Image 1 (tube, rainbow, N blue to C red):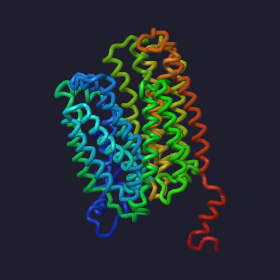
Image 2: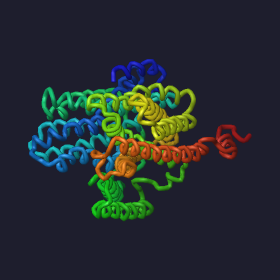
Image 3: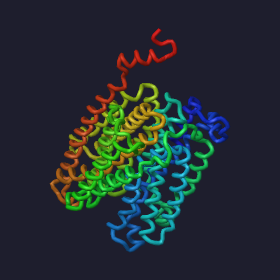
Image 4: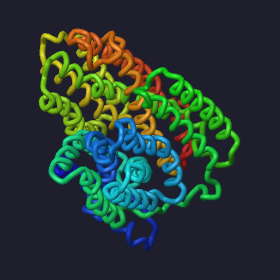
Length: 508
Protein backbone atom coordinates (compact mmCIF):
# COMPACT_ATOMS: atom_id res chain seq x y z
CA UNK A 1 0.00 0.00 0.00
CA UNK A 2 2.83 2.37 0.81
CA UNK A 3 4.33 1.95 -2.65
CA UNK A 4 1.03 2.59 -4.38
CA UNK A 5 0.27 5.56 -2.20
CA UNK A 6 3.69 7.00 -2.98
CA UNK A 7 2.68 7.20 -6.64
CA UNK A 8 -0.51 8.94 -5.62
CA UNK A 9 1.12 11.75 -3.67
CA UNK A 10 2.29 13.56 -6.78
CA UNK A 11 -1.35 13.92 -7.79
CA UNK A 12 -2.60 15.17 -4.47
CA UNK A 13 -1.73 18.84 -4.94
CA UNK A 14 -4.30 19.07 -7.70
CA UNK A 15 -7.23 17.77 -5.64
CA UNK A 16 -10.31 19.90 -5.23
CA UNK A 17 -11.21 21.30 -1.83
CA UNK A 18 -14.62 19.78 -1.02
CA UNK A 19 -17.51 22.04 -0.15
CA UNK A 20 -18.44 21.93 3.54
CA UNK A 21 -20.70 23.77 5.92
CA UNK A 22 -19.43 27.01 7.37
CA UNK A 23 -18.09 26.50 10.83
CA UNK A 24 -17.60 22.77 10.38
CA UNK A 25 -14.19 22.31 11.97
CA UNK A 26 -13.87 18.72 10.90
CA UNK A 27 -14.84 19.42 7.31
CA UNK A 28 -12.73 22.56 7.14
CA UNK A 29 -9.58 20.50 7.49
CA UNK A 30 -9.90 19.23 3.94
CA UNK A 31 -9.10 22.69 2.59
CA UNK A 32 -5.43 21.97 3.23
CA UNK A 33 -3.78 19.93 0.43
CA UNK A 34 -2.18 17.54 2.93
CA UNK A 35 -5.62 16.86 4.43
CA UNK A 36 -6.87 15.64 1.05
CA UNK A 37 -4.00 13.13 1.03
CA UNK A 38 -5.02 11.76 4.42
CA UNK A 39 -8.70 11.68 3.46
CA UNK A 40 -7.79 9.47 0.52
CA UNK A 41 -5.62 7.28 2.75
CA UNK A 42 -8.66 6.69 4.98
CA UNK A 43 -10.77 5.66 1.97
CA UNK A 44 -7.96 3.46 0.66
CA UNK A 45 -7.65 1.71 4.04
CA UNK A 46 -11.41 1.13 4.12
CA UNK A 47 -11.27 -0.49 0.68
CA UNK A 48 -8.18 -2.53 1.58
CA UNK A 49 -9.71 -3.93 4.78
CA UNK A 50 -13.03 -4.85 3.21
CA UNK A 51 -11.37 -6.71 0.31
CA UNK A 52 -8.85 -8.34 2.65
CA UNK A 53 -11.73 -9.71 4.71
CA UNK A 54 -13.05 -11.51 1.63
CA UNK A 55 -9.89 -13.50 0.89
CA UNK A 56 -7.96 -13.88 4.14
CA UNK A 57 -10.33 -16.37 5.78
CA UNK A 58 -10.39 -18.86 2.89
CA UNK A 59 -6.86 -20.09 3.55
CA UNK A 60 -7.77 -20.80 7.18
CA UNK A 61 -10.74 -23.11 6.54
CA UNK A 62 -8.81 -26.37 7.14
CA UNK A 63 -7.41 -24.98 10.40
CA UNK A 64 -10.86 -23.79 11.50
CA UNK A 65 -12.38 -27.21 10.74
CA UNK A 66 -9.75 -28.78 13.00
CA UNK A 67 -10.04 -26.14 15.74
CA UNK A 68 -13.83 -26.40 16.01
CA UNK A 69 -14.05 -30.11 15.14
CA UNK A 70 -16.42 -29.20 12.30
CA UNK A 71 -16.98 -30.39 8.74
CA UNK A 72 -15.62 -28.51 5.75
CA UNK A 73 -19.20 -27.73 4.69
CA UNK A 74 -19.81 -26.09 8.06
CA UNK A 75 -16.68 -23.95 8.11
CA UNK A 76 -17.35 -22.78 4.53
CA UNK A 77 -19.95 -20.49 6.11
CA UNK A 78 -17.11 -18.44 7.58
CA UNK A 79 -16.47 -17.27 4.00
CA UNK A 80 -20.06 -17.42 2.69
CA UNK A 81 -21.53 -15.43 5.60
CA UNK A 82 -19.20 -12.52 4.89
CA UNK A 83 -19.76 -12.59 1.14
CA UNK A 84 -23.55 -12.89 1.38
CA UNK A 85 -23.77 -10.09 3.98
CA UNK A 86 -21.92 -7.75 1.62
CA UNK A 87 -23.95 -8.81 -1.40
CA UNK A 88 -27.36 -8.47 0.22
CA UNK A 89 -26.80 -5.17 2.05
CA UNK A 90 -24.47 -3.06 -0.07
CA UNK A 91 -27.24 -1.22 -1.97
CA UNK A 92 -29.24 -0.56 1.20
CA UNK A 93 -26.28 0.95 3.03
CA UNK A 94 -25.59 3.13 -0.01
CA UNK A 95 -29.13 4.53 0.27
CA UNK A 96 -28.68 5.12 4.00
CA UNK A 97 -25.45 6.99 3.31
CA UNK A 98 -27.27 9.30 0.89
CA UNK A 99 -29.90 10.00 3.58
CA UNK A 100 -28.08 10.25 6.91
CA UNK A 101 -24.66 11.35 5.61
CA UNK A 102 -21.92 9.32 3.96
CA UNK A 103 -19.09 10.35 6.26
CA UNK A 104 -21.20 9.62 9.33
CA UNK A 105 -22.22 6.17 8.10
CA UNK A 106 -18.69 5.34 6.92
CA UNK A 107 -17.44 5.94 10.46
CA UNK A 108 -20.15 3.58 11.75
CA UNK A 109 -19.11 0.98 9.16
CA UNK A 110 -15.43 1.21 10.08
CA UNK A 111 -16.31 0.90 13.76
CA UNK A 112 -18.57 -2.10 13.12
CA UNK A 113 -15.95 -3.84 10.96
CA UNK A 114 -13.23 -3.22 13.55
CA UNK A 115 -15.33 -4.45 16.48
CA UNK A 116 -16.58 -7.49 14.57
CA UNK A 117 -13.01 -8.39 13.58
CA UNK A 118 -12.03 -8.47 17.25
CA UNK A 119 -15.09 -10.63 18.02
CA UNK A 120 -14.11 -13.02 15.22
CA UNK A 121 -10.70 -13.46 16.79
CA UNK A 122 -12.26 -14.15 20.20
CA UNK A 123 -15.12 -16.41 19.00
CA UNK A 124 -15.50 -19.42 21.34
CA UNK A 125 -17.65 -21.44 18.92
CA UNK A 126 -18.07 -21.77 15.17
CA UNK A 127 -21.58 -20.31 15.42
CA UNK A 128 -20.23 -17.22 17.19
CA UNK A 129 -17.54 -16.84 14.53
CA UNK A 130 -20.09 -17.01 11.70
CA UNK A 131 -22.33 -14.46 13.45
CA UNK A 132 -19.36 -12.12 13.89
CA UNK A 133 -18.49 -12.58 10.22
CA UNK A 134 -22.01 -11.44 9.28
CA UNK A 135 -21.46 -8.25 11.30
CA UNK A 136 -18.03 -7.85 9.74
CA UNK A 137 -19.61 -8.23 6.29
CA UNK A 138 -22.12 -5.48 7.08
CA UNK A 139 -19.28 -3.16 8.05
CA UNK A 140 -17.42 -4.11 4.87
CA UNK A 141 -20.52 -3.38 2.75
CA UNK A 142 -20.69 0.13 4.23
CA UNK A 143 -16.99 0.72 3.61
CA UNK A 144 -17.09 -0.57 0.02
CA UNK A 145 -20.14 1.43 -0.99
CA UNK A 146 -19.28 4.71 0.70
CA UNK A 147 -15.54 4.77 -0.06
CA UNK A 148 -16.40 4.98 -3.77
CA UNK A 149 -19.21 7.48 -3.15
CA UNK A 150 -17.02 9.80 -1.06
CA UNK A 151 -14.50 10.15 -3.89
CA UNK A 152 -17.00 12.46 -5.57
CA UNK A 153 -16.95 14.78 -2.56
CA UNK A 154 -13.20 14.73 -1.82
CA UNK A 155 -11.65 14.86 -5.28
CA UNK A 156 -11.91 17.25 -8.23
CA UNK A 157 -13.83 15.87 -11.17
CA UNK A 158 -10.83 15.86 -13.47
CA UNK A 159 -8.82 13.81 -10.94
CA UNK A 160 -11.45 11.25 -9.94
CA UNK A 161 -9.97 8.66 -12.30
CA UNK A 162 -6.75 8.65 -10.30
CA UNK A 163 -8.69 8.31 -7.05
CA UNK A 164 -10.77 5.44 -8.46
CA UNK A 165 -7.54 3.82 -9.63
CA UNK A 166 -6.07 4.09 -6.13
CA UNK A 167 -9.15 2.45 -4.58
CA UNK A 168 -9.10 -0.23 -7.27
CA UNK A 169 -5.46 -0.94 -6.45
CA UNK A 170 -6.31 -1.26 -2.76
CA UNK A 171 -9.09 -3.71 -3.58
CA UNK A 172 -6.73 -5.80 -5.72
CA UNK A 173 -3.98 -5.68 -3.10
CA UNK A 174 -6.39 -6.83 -0.40
CA UNK A 175 -7.65 -9.71 -2.52
CA UNK A 176 -4.13 -10.77 -3.53
CA UNK A 177 -2.58 -10.32 -0.08
CA UNK A 178 -5.28 -12.21 1.83
CA UNK A 179 -4.24 -15.84 1.25
CA UNK A 180 -0.49 -15.30 1.75
CA UNK A 181 -0.96 -13.03 4.77
CA UNK A 182 -3.50 -15.40 6.29
CA UNK A 183 -1.17 -18.36 5.84
CA UNK A 184 1.71 -16.46 7.45
CA UNK A 185 -0.39 -15.37 10.44
CA UNK A 186 -1.78 -18.87 10.98
CA UNK A 187 1.71 -20.39 10.87
CA UNK A 188 3.31 -17.87 13.22
CA UNK A 189 0.50 -16.79 15.57
CA UNK A 190 -2.50 -19.09 15.09
CA UNK A 191 -5.79 -18.68 13.20
CA UNK A 192 -7.19 -15.98 15.51
CA UNK A 193 -4.47 -13.61 14.32
CA UNK A 194 -6.19 -13.56 10.89
CA UNK A 195 -8.93 -11.44 12.46
CA UNK A 196 -6.93 -9.58 15.11
CA UNK A 197 -4.79 -8.16 12.31
CA UNK A 198 -7.68 -5.87 11.29
CA UNK A 199 -8.53 -3.77 14.41
CA UNK A 200 -5.35 -1.62 14.49
CA UNK A 201 -5.78 -0.70 10.82
CA UNK A 202 -9.49 -0.15 11.39
CA UNK A 203 -8.81 2.27 14.23
CA UNK A 204 -6.32 4.16 12.04
CA UNK A 205 -8.83 4.34 9.15
CA UNK A 206 -11.53 5.61 11.51
CA UNK A 207 -9.34 8.31 13.02
CA UNK A 208 -8.23 9.55 9.61
CA UNK A 209 -11.79 9.53 8.26
CA UNK A 210 -13.07 11.44 11.30
CA UNK A 211 -10.31 14.01 11.10
CA UNK A 212 -9.96 14.63 7.38
CA UNK A 213 -13.07 13.62 5.41
CA UNK A 214 -15.41 16.51 4.54
CA UNK A 215 -18.49 16.94 6.69
CA UNK A 216 -21.93 15.84 5.54
CA UNK A 217 -22.88 19.25 4.19
CA UNK A 218 -25.66 18.23 1.78
CA UNK A 219 -29.18 18.36 3.15
CA UNK A 220 -30.79 14.90 2.99
CA UNK A 221 -33.54 14.39 0.44
CA UNK A 222 -35.41 12.01 2.72
CA UNK A 223 -35.34 10.79 6.31
CA UNK A 224 -35.26 7.43 8.03
CA UNK A 225 -39.05 7.36 8.32
CA UNK A 226 -39.12 7.16 4.53
CA UNK A 227 -36.70 4.22 4.42
CA UNK A 228 -37.96 1.44 2.19
CA UNK A 229 -37.73 -1.40 4.71
CA UNK A 230 -39.95 -3.64 2.58
CA UNK A 231 -37.74 -3.08 -0.43
CA UNK A 232 -34.61 -3.71 1.62
CA UNK A 233 -36.03 -7.01 2.91
CA UNK A 234 -37.14 -8.20 -0.53
CA UNK A 235 -33.84 -7.22 -2.13
CA UNK A 236 -31.91 -8.98 0.65
CA UNK A 237 -33.98 -12.16 0.18
CA UNK A 238 -33.50 -11.98 -3.61
CA UNK A 239 -29.74 -11.54 -3.42
CA UNK A 240 -29.20 -14.01 -0.56
CA UNK A 241 -31.23 -16.70 -2.35
CA UNK A 242 -29.33 -16.12 -5.59
CA UNK A 243 -25.95 -16.15 -3.86
CA UNK A 244 -26.80 -19.38 -2.03
CA UNK A 245 -28.05 -20.98 -5.24
CA UNK A 246 -24.76 -20.15 -6.93
CA UNK A 247 -22.53 -21.30 -4.06
CA UNK A 248 -24.37 -24.21 -2.36
CA UNK A 249 -23.06 -27.46 -3.75
CA UNK A 250 -20.66 -25.55 -5.99
CA UNK A 251 -23.57 -24.05 -7.89
CA UNK A 252 -24.92 -27.40 -9.06
CA UNK A 253 -28.32 -28.07 -10.57
CA UNK A 254 -29.93 -29.90 -7.65
CA UNK A 255 -33.44 -29.33 -6.33
CA UNK A 256 -32.11 -27.07 -3.58
CA UNK A 257 -30.38 -24.78 -6.06
CA UNK A 258 -33.50 -24.70 -8.25
CA UNK A 259 -35.68 -23.81 -5.28
CA UNK A 260 -33.36 -21.00 -4.25
CA UNK A 261 -33.33 -19.60 -7.79
CA UNK A 262 -37.13 -19.72 -7.86
CA UNK A 263 -37.25 -17.89 -4.52
CA UNK A 264 -34.84 -15.26 -5.92
CA UNK A 265 -37.05 -14.81 -8.99
CA UNK A 266 -40.27 -14.45 -6.99
CA UNK A 267 -38.75 -12.10 -4.39
CA UNK A 268 -37.14 -10.07 -7.16
CA UNK A 269 -40.48 -9.71 -8.92
CA UNK A 270 -42.15 -8.48 -5.74
CA UNK A 271 -39.24 -6.07 -5.20
CA UNK A 272 -39.72 -4.51 -8.64
CA UNK A 273 -43.47 -4.26 -8.02
CA UNK A 274 -42.96 -2.60 -4.64
CA UNK A 275 -40.38 -0.10 -5.91
CA UNK A 276 -42.92 1.33 -8.35
CA UNK A 277 -45.39 2.01 -5.53
CA UNK A 278 -43.49 3.39 -2.53
CA UNK A 279 -42.87 7.11 -2.08
CA UNK A 280 -39.12 6.77 -1.45
CA UNK A 281 -37.90 3.60 -3.18
CA UNK A 282 -34.62 1.96 -2.30
CA UNK A 283 -33.76 1.90 -6.03
CA UNK A 284 -35.48 4.26 -8.45
CA UNK A 285 -36.10 1.94 -11.38
CA UNK A 286 -36.14 4.92 -13.73
CA UNK A 287 -32.35 5.14 -13.25
CA UNK A 288 -31.95 2.08 -15.44
CA UNK A 289 -33.29 4.01 -18.41
CA UNK A 290 -29.92 5.78 -18.40
CA UNK A 291 -27.77 3.75 -20.83
CA UNK A 292 -24.57 4.86 -19.09
CA UNK A 293 -25.62 3.36 -15.76
CA UNK A 294 -27.18 0.24 -17.27
CA UNK A 295 -24.16 -0.41 -19.47
CA UNK A 296 -21.76 0.20 -16.58
CA UNK A 297 -23.52 -2.27 -14.28
CA UNK A 298 -23.94 -4.92 -16.98
CA UNK A 299 -20.35 -4.81 -18.16
CA UNK A 300 -19.08 -4.82 -14.57
CA UNK A 301 -20.91 -8.08 -13.89
CA UNK A 302 -19.75 -9.67 -17.16
CA UNK A 303 -16.06 -8.90 -16.71
CA UNK A 304 -16.11 -9.94 -13.03
CA UNK A 305 -17.31 -13.39 -14.12
CA UNK A 306 -14.32 -13.60 -16.47
CA UNK A 307 -11.94 -12.57 -13.69
CA UNK A 308 -13.38 -15.37 -11.56
CA UNK A 309 -12.57 -17.81 -14.39
CA UNK A 310 -8.87 -17.06 -13.92
CA UNK A 311 -9.17 -17.93 -10.22
CA UNK A 312 -11.24 -21.08 -10.74
CA UNK A 313 -9.40 -22.59 -13.71
CA UNK A 314 -5.82 -21.37 -13.23
CA UNK A 315 -4.76 -23.54 -10.26
CA UNK A 316 -6.04 -26.74 -11.91
CA UNK A 317 -4.35 -25.99 -15.23
CA UNK A 318 -1.01 -25.09 -13.65
CA UNK A 319 -1.01 -28.06 -11.28
CA UNK A 320 -2.67 -30.83 -13.32
CA UNK A 321 -1.64 -29.98 -16.89
CA UNK A 322 1.74 -28.34 -16.33
CA UNK A 323 2.65 -30.37 -13.22
CA UNK A 324 3.77 -27.44 -11.05
CA UNK A 325 3.99 -27.71 -7.26
CA UNK A 326 1.72 -25.77 -4.92
CA UNK A 327 4.28 -23.07 -4.11
CA UNK A 328 4.93 -22.25 -7.76
CA UNK A 329 1.20 -22.37 -8.57
CA UNK A 330 0.52 -19.83 -5.82
CA UNK A 331 3.36 -17.61 -7.01
CA UNK A 332 2.19 -17.62 -10.64
CA UNK A 333 -1.45 -17.10 -9.66
CA UNK A 334 -0.46 -14.00 -7.68
CA UNK A 335 0.88 -12.40 -10.88
CA UNK A 336 -2.64 -11.46 -11.99
CA UNK A 337 -3.79 -9.61 -8.85
CA UNK A 338 -0.34 -8.02 -8.54
CA UNK A 339 -0.59 -6.67 -12.09
CA UNK A 340 -4.07 -5.30 -11.36
CA UNK A 341 -2.82 -3.63 -8.18
CA UNK A 342 0.15 -2.02 -9.88
CA UNK A 343 -1.94 -0.95 -12.85
CA UNK A 344 -4.66 0.82 -10.87
CA UNK A 345 -3.00 4.21 -10.33
CA UNK A 346 -1.54 4.50 -13.86
CA UNK A 347 -4.94 3.52 -15.23
CA UNK A 348 -6.51 6.31 -13.21
CA UNK A 349 -4.10 8.85 -14.63
CA UNK A 350 -4.92 7.72 -18.17
CA UNK A 351 -8.63 8.08 -17.45
CA UNK A 352 -8.10 11.62 -16.17
CA UNK A 353 -6.16 12.60 -19.29
CA UNK A 354 -8.02 10.74 -22.04
CA UNK A 355 -11.52 10.34 -20.63
CA UNK A 356 -13.43 7.37 -19.24
CA UNK A 357 -15.57 6.22 -22.23
CA UNK A 358 -12.79 5.37 -24.71
CA UNK A 359 -10.64 3.71 -22.04
CA UNK A 360 -13.56 1.55 -20.95
CA UNK A 361 -13.52 0.08 -24.44
CA UNK A 362 -9.72 -0.20 -24.47
CA UNK A 363 -9.81 -2.14 -21.20
CA UNK A 364 -12.47 -4.50 -22.54
CA UNK A 365 -10.52 -5.00 -25.78
CA UNK A 366 -7.43 -5.93 -23.78
CA UNK A 367 -9.42 -8.47 -21.77
CA UNK A 368 -10.75 -9.96 -25.01
CA UNK A 369 -7.19 -10.31 -26.35
CA UNK A 370 -5.95 -12.01 -23.16
CA UNK A 371 -8.94 -14.36 -22.97
CA UNK A 372 -8.61 -15.36 -26.63
CA UNK A 373 -4.90 -16.09 -26.09
CA UNK A 374 -5.81 -18.54 -23.31
CA UNK A 375 -8.58 -19.98 -25.45
CA UNK A 376 -6.04 -20.88 -28.15
CA UNK A 377 -3.14 -21.69 -25.79
CA UNK A 378 -1.29 -24.98 -26.50
CA UNK A 379 -0.14 -26.61 -23.22
CA UNK A 380 3.30 -27.28 -24.73
CA UNK A 381 4.17 -23.58 -24.40
CA UNK A 382 4.40 -23.89 -20.61
CA UNK A 383 3.70 -21.64 -17.62
CA UNK A 384 4.99 -18.36 -19.07
CA UNK A 385 2.51 -18.66 -21.94
CA UNK A 386 -0.28 -18.82 -19.31
CA UNK A 387 0.98 -15.99 -17.14
CA UNK A 388 1.41 -13.46 -19.97
CA UNK A 389 -2.28 -13.57 -21.03
CA UNK A 390 -3.27 -13.59 -17.35
CA UNK A 391 -1.37 -10.34 -16.79
CA UNK A 392 -2.96 -8.84 -19.93
CA UNK A 393 -6.43 -9.75 -18.63
CA UNK A 394 -5.92 -8.39 -15.11
CA UNK A 395 -4.14 -5.21 -16.20
CA UNK A 396 -6.88 -4.52 -18.73
CA UNK A 397 -9.45 -5.21 -16.02
CA UNK A 398 -7.83 -2.57 -13.80
CA UNK A 399 -8.15 -0.07 -16.65
CA UNK A 400 -11.75 -1.07 -17.36
CA UNK A 401 -12.83 -0.93 -13.73
CA UNK A 402 -11.28 2.49 -13.16
CA UNK A 403 -12.78 3.94 -16.35
CA UNK A 404 -16.18 2.32 -15.84
CA UNK A 405 -16.51 3.42 -12.21
CA UNK A 406 -15.43 6.95 -13.13
CA UNK A 407 -17.94 7.17 -16.00
CA UNK A 408 -20.85 5.93 -13.88
CA UNK A 409 -19.93 8.14 -10.90
CA UNK A 410 -19.63 11.20 -13.16
CA UNK A 411 -23.16 10.62 -14.42
CA UNK A 412 -24.63 10.20 -10.91
CA UNK A 413 -26.64 12.87 -9.10
CA UNK A 414 -24.96 13.94 -5.83
CA UNK A 415 -27.88 12.64 -3.74
CA UNK A 416 -27.69 9.20 -5.40
CA UNK A 417 -23.94 8.55 -5.24
CA UNK A 418 -24.25 6.13 -2.33
CA UNK A 419 -26.88 3.97 -4.01
CA UNK A 420 -25.07 3.94 -7.36
CA UNK A 421 -21.72 3.12 -5.74
CA UNK A 422 -23.45 0.29 -3.91
CA UNK A 423 -24.93 -0.95 -7.17
CA UNK A 424 -21.50 -0.92 -8.83
CA UNK A 425 -20.06 -3.03 -6.02
CA UNK A 426 -23.12 -5.29 -6.12
CA UNK A 427 -22.77 -5.90 -9.86
CA UNK A 428 -19.14 -6.89 -9.35
CA UNK A 429 -20.00 -9.27 -6.49
CA UNK A 430 -22.83 -10.86 -8.46
CA UNK A 431 -20.44 -11.32 -11.37
CA UNK A 432 -17.90 -13.02 -9.13
CA UNK A 433 -20.52 -15.30 -7.59
CA UNK A 434 -22.06 -16.18 -10.94
CA UNK A 435 -18.64 -16.64 -12.54
CA UNK A 436 -17.56 -19.09 -9.85
CA UNK A 437 -20.58 -21.28 -10.64
CA UNK A 438 -20.92 -20.74 -14.40
CA UNK A 439 -17.24 -20.91 -15.28
CA UNK A 440 -16.75 -23.87 -12.96
CA UNK A 441 -19.55 -25.71 -14.78
CA UNK A 442 -18.09 -24.84 -18.20
CA UNK A 443 -14.65 -26.00 -17.05
CA UNK A 444 -16.02 -29.34 -15.82
CA UNK A 445 -18.00 -29.81 -19.04
CA UNK A 446 -14.99 -29.03 -21.21
CA UNK A 447 -12.83 -31.43 -19.20
CA UNK A 448 -15.52 -34.14 -19.53
CA UNK A 449 -15.26 -34.85 -15.82
CA UNK A 450 -17.67 -34.62 -12.89
CA UNK A 451 -14.67 -34.29 -10.56
CA UNK A 452 -12.02 -32.07 -12.13
CA UNK A 453 -9.47 -33.07 -9.48
CA UNK A 454 -9.40 -36.55 -11.05
CA UNK A 455 -9.30 -35.41 -14.69
CA UNK A 456 -6.27 -36.07 -16.88
CA UNK A 457 -3.82 -33.35 -17.89
CA UNK A 458 -5.19 -33.31 -21.44
CA UNK A 459 -8.80 -33.04 -20.19
CA UNK A 460 -7.95 -30.15 -17.88
CA UNK A 461 -6.28 -28.31 -20.76
CA UNK A 462 -9.39 -28.84 -22.92
CA UNK A 463 -11.59 -27.54 -20.10
CA UNK A 464 -9.40 -24.48 -19.69
CA UNK A 465 -9.59 -23.69 -23.40
CA UNK A 466 -13.36 -24.04 -23.49
CA UNK A 467 -13.74 -21.86 -20.39
CA UNK A 468 -11.78 -19.01 -21.92
CA UNK A 469 -13.58 -19.44 -25.22
CA UNK A 470 -16.80 -18.69 -23.32
CA UNK A 471 -15.00 -15.87 -21.47
CA UNK A 472 -13.98 -14.30 -24.78
CA UNK A 473 -17.62 -14.39 -25.88
CA UNK A 474 -18.74 -12.69 -22.66
CA UNK A 475 -16.19 -9.92 -23.14
CA UNK A 476 -17.38 -9.39 -26.71
CA UNK A 477 -20.93 -8.98 -25.37
CA UNK A 478 -19.58 -6.48 -22.83
CA UNK A 479 -17.89 -4.50 -25.63
CA UNK A 480 -21.20 -4.24 -27.53
CA UNK A 481 -23.04 -3.14 -24.36
CA UNK A 482 -20.35 -0.57 -23.49
CA UNK A 483 -20.33 0.84 -27.03
CA UNK A 484 -24.13 1.27 -26.94
CA UNK A 485 -23.95 3.03 -23.56
CA UNK A 486 -21.02 5.20 -24.64
CA UNK A 487 -23.11 7.04 -27.22
CA UNK A 488 -25.21 8.54 -24.44
CA UNK A 489 -22.12 10.32 -23.10
CA UNK A 490 -21.95 12.43 -26.26
CA UNK A 491 -24.49 15.28 -25.95
CA UNK A 492 -27.06 15.56 -28.72
CA UNK A 493 -27.37 18.94 -30.49
CA UNK A 494 -30.72 19.52 -28.79
CA UNK A 495 -29.12 18.97 -25.37
CA UNK A 496 -26.37 21.48 -26.19
CA UNK A 497 -28.93 24.06 -27.31
CA UNK A 498 -30.99 23.53 -24.17
CA UNK A 499 -27.91 23.89 -21.94
CA UNK A 500 -26.91 27.09 -23.73
CA UNK A 501 -30.37 28.60 -23.38
CA UNK A 502 -30.35 27.88 -19.64
CA UNK A 503 -27.15 29.90 -19.10
CA UNK A 504 -27.31 33.55 -18.08
CA UNK A 505 -27.86 35.46 -21.29
CA UNK A 506 -28.28 32.17 -23.17
CA UNK A 507 -30.64 32.34 -26.10
CA UNK A 508 -30.27 36.10 -26.45
